[in-house]
Amino acid sequence: MTLQTDSKTATTPYQNTPRVEKDAEGVWHIRGYAEAKELLKEDLLQDGFAAENVLKSGLDPVLYQHGDPHRVQRAAIAKYFSPTTVSQKHLPMMEKAADEILAELVKAKRMNLKTLTTRMAASVTAAVVGLKPSKSMIRRIDDMLHSPPAVSKNRIGRFISSTNGYLRQVRFWLFDVRPAIASRKRHPQDDVISFMLSKEKNDLAILAECIVYGAAGMATTQEFICVVLMHAMENPKVREALTSPDIVVRYEALHEILRLEPVIGKIKRKAIEPVAVTSNGETHNILVDARIEFHVYDVNADAQAVGMEPERVHPHRNLEKGTYRSLIGFGSGSHRCAGEHLAIAETDIFVRKLMSLKGLRVEKQPEIKFNKTVEGYEINDYILAVD
Image (cartoon, rainbow, N blue to C red; front, side, top):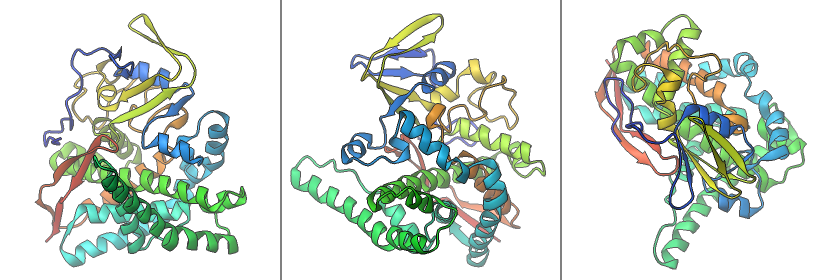
């Protein structure tokens, strides 16, 4: 995957392909925005991010729940991620974290942007969840996120790979989650771990939730900050919008970039009851246990939803009422990303402060990789310098 410097999308959206279709294996593929939004309102089962293994484990992190348990859990944790909580509680923490991180860049004169964004995303996620955002914790989460899948053809190879993955989780438990649980038992705080303890969740359930939040909050946001800066450094109009004194202008531009450059390229679900979706006047009936794949790049480049030049960034794009500015960049329906407001706010703060540094320049363009886990991009070795 190659990100374009003329503000075009990172991948090529669909051209004249069906908005809804079923392949030979019975998997449904959704590429239209109206159809995706309609279907994602349904009570579908998570079918991505190793869902099968998680469900077999008996654990129920919020990402993998559905139905009433999911609605109850989401309603309970919503206060930690609401716009009001973000503005009143988290903004000062994010401002402080960004200042401290960028001070290191100024001192060092030259750093990898991924190092900076990883620290920013991890610091914010840790504060909300209830972990201590140390550099060693960041390394442990990063190790888990980049743990290679057990794909070896022989059992010994798969065993070694799986064991290494479990060991990474054990280290995260021993050095980060367990101390945080002990601390919150003594002194409860207004964070996710304290909430789970108040609901008498066991240690393993809390560990699973911390891993999910760590992945969702750190892996996605660190990449998004990188791609936002890439667009800002290459497109004067984007940079002007992102540095505007008007927060509405800045947030519109951020959502537009996420629409064009979604970090997660495919949303996967499974039907647990029959559902139907209408496209171009035709009703498609999806049976129980059918798998559904929402092609996020295609959906987000749907000209019927976004209008002219769907493959280009327009910092202010006129959209019909009810259309999300990032379309399904944050998902949609009951599983829409809980940390959406947090991610936009921390990206806004970090990018504005970064672009305000005198003498900021790109010393080395990044290497763009395809991340199989999220089926999206991964930006590495983007070297910034401050003269």
